[in-house]
Amino acid sequence: MSYEVVKSLIQYQGKFVAVKEDTILLPDGKTASREVVQRGAATAILPIDKHGNVILVRQYRHAVGQMLLEVPAGILEKGENPAECAKRELEEETGYQTNALEFVCQMYPTPGFCDEQLYLYLAQDLAEGKQNFDEDEFIEVEKYSIEQALDMVEKGEIQDAKTILLLYGYVAKKGHK
Image (cartoon, rainbow, N blue to C red; front, side, top):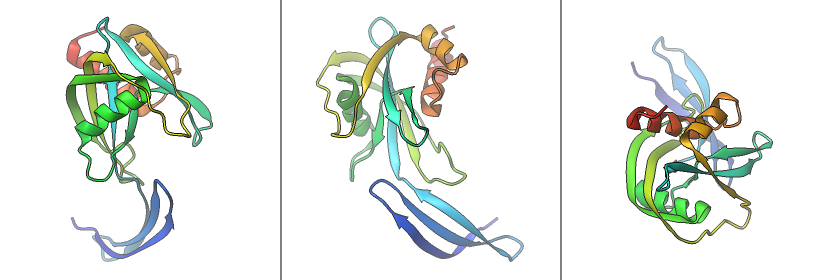
């Protein structure tokens, strides 16, 4: 089936997102309107230290009005490949570096309205680096055992989808819990 875009207008252009309105031709010949948030690509990383602890970051997420505990993540810069972005974001947000980055998968977190692609990674063999927050970032770094983190998911204390996916993916791959 083909859903041809017959008209596309940018309704909003911001610093990190744009919103466009597309008119699409449906298979039955009718048209429909679809709003699309254009976000681009980003990475998310589950860092595991030498003791098997996961390193997470707690930061304010204005869209939901609360502090969330999540894996380090960030937007790809122009021309940057996802693995390099993952390494950069890991160090900027947690102060850890890695040369043991393992690709997990590429996904669309909210394809019903947003074109954002996420590249997910595991990071092990961590070494100390240097944190370098953006001027509007206030991040707390926290460590938990994998069991503690999974319990926090079950209790609703970790609600971020990319974090939950990476935690359960790690468990499935490594055979924990």
